[in-house]
Structures are given as C-alpha cells and as structure tokens.
Length: 319
Image (cartoon, rainbow, N blue to C red; front, top):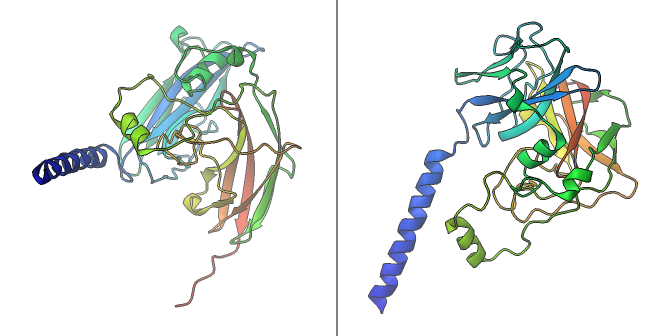
C-alpha cells in the first residue's frame, strides 16, 4: 500500500514538474519582442476607411514605452498616427484606428515597432477584402460569444459611450492623486454571460487536462470601465502609474482570478446607477502622459483620451 502511494506521489510530482517546466519555457516576463498586428478595415459613412491595429506584447510583465520616432512609426506619411507608446502585456486587439481617404485603393500603411531587445516587427494595413471588420467580427474575435459565431445579443448590441467630464487636458503633481470622472452610457447588451463561479480542485484539474473547447478566447460579458496608460513621454515612467480602484484589465489575461474579463471566475463589477465612474490616478514621476479610458460591455467598446502634464519631483525616501 505504501509503495502504491509513493508511486502516485511520484507521478503527480513528474506531472507538476513537467507542467511547470513547460510554462517556464513558453512564457516570459521580460526581454521579449512586441508583435504588431493589423486587425482589418471598416468602411465609414463618409466613404473613408478606418484601419484597425493592435499588438501582442510577448512579455507577461514588461510594458515597454517606445516613443514615436525611429522605433515606433508609420509610413508612408506622418509617423505619428495615434498609436500607443506604452504597451500593455500580451494580446491587445483593436487598440486604435487610422483613418485613410476614400481613394486609398491598393496602398499599404505600415506600422513599424522595434522592441527594446532590438527585434523589429511590421504590420501592413490594406483594403484586402478578407480583412473587412464589423461589429460581429469584433465581438467574436474578442471572445464575447464564447468562441461561437454570433448571438442575438450581439446583433442588437451597440457600442457603449464614454464621456470624460473633467476635461481632456489635466495637470497633476507627482504623488498627488488626480481624480478622473467619466460617464458611461450603454444599451444593456449583450446580457451578462458569466464564467464559472465555483472553484474546486477537481474542476481545475479537468480544466488543465481537458481538450480545448473553443478556438479563440472566451470573454465574460458585462459593462465595465478601465483606465490605462496609453502613452508616456520619453522621461516619464508609465509603469509606475497607479489607479484606484484597481482597473479591470484591457488585455487578454486568461489566468484564473486575475481581474480580467478573459479570466475564469471574473465577475463584472457593479455598474453605478448614475453611470458615473470616478478613478484616482497617481503618478510616480513627472512627464507627459496620455491615459485611455475604455468603456467595454463585453462585446464592443468606446475609448476616450486624457492628456496629463505631471510636474514636481518624486520624494526621496530616507533610510
């Protein structure tokens, strides 16, 4: 009996070691590159086109700040097309759009990013027919339908609307919280689709060992509002900006219980009755920052931006 127990323990140890080794080999905290992505295009009412771009930061922790210039630019034409300079971890879809004229034709718009590790990646924006974007595609690609092709809720869903109430240019001092106030309006679709709420050892074991059930990410639907650092000046420290309350992640963190709509056991936060969201943001170092506020109903989203000029010096702690 004792030998049997030892055998089982040995097998469990080997399995855990193999999983841990595989995780360590295939996931990285720092030092990896950023893969830029062209998501597709949408025909606008005035005949122009919006080209959608996103990225995949291969790092789990490192969030590089790559200022506009030789390491982060568009071509041909203006190098600054509203792209981020501060890159959130992992996969970030439909991050921004670039509007091009109705006669864009068969041209290409190229986004080039060179990561701190020296690797360069390019995304090629064009009007190839296979890259047409609509609201169903956005909802499906971001996981609102649970990997399915659509839903009645998705057909009825319209984008939420976020309005910044205190102005889109603000001033702050280092270590002094600044309050951001925004109103979010939504149509109530898609209806909240929650993930699993009970976490047991048996269910976790089945999840780890079971075959994948979907071919894309699975997102929990529910209206929420998040602020992130979108840009930081060359001398600013985007990684040291703090938000209170802790913001729901806008990047696809699928690890359980990680404050992400793509995470198992995530529950949408309560929606304020008046639709007003207040968030305190604190900056650890001076500089110019652009913050993005995203209202997300689980399927569609709307973004607004606030530029903050931060002055003062960080207080030195005494030892």
